[in-house]
Length: 107
Length: 120
Image 1: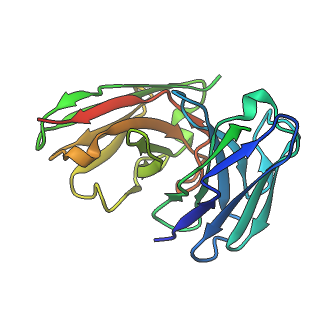
Image 2: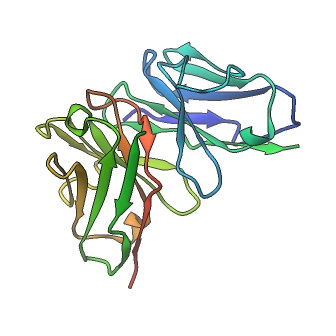
């Protein structure tokens, strides 16, 4: 099983600032990585797939990078609606696995 | 517009059974793989099971293998999860998700979830 580790667990950022979230895989997943956003009481929402391809309608302030075992999700200028929990997920191998999440909170 | 609506959750005793349903609309159901993903209270996400578009291929997390069965009905545009021999640790919100054409990818759309509580 591929273990996905996200850091930090909590990120405190002021509105308008940049947020950088990390996701590490225990073995290479190539570019088979997705990112999701989950707000309180809601279902997760797909943000990114293929490590760097934005889902339909996602604002350009979101960007993804990386391949192999190291991945980054960057939000260039945080808006109020971006404060949420973010999860990465690998789909390189079964079982499909998620990271533990990074909570982005208001500083 | 893609819509996924789960139902069937509730309170069940350990060792009991429950069947979850997911009504899908807004896309050609038989063309896409579908999955169940769960989230225990206050914790992260866990993939549970996936089924191919045709229904011929299925995969399960080790934690549910042998106890849960995923299936789909193309005439009803519905996805199901039969859960037997339920354990306390199966308590979670269960989400129905739509994948791409092939199975074992990412979860493009999510339902709102249905809560399963396993407790005596």
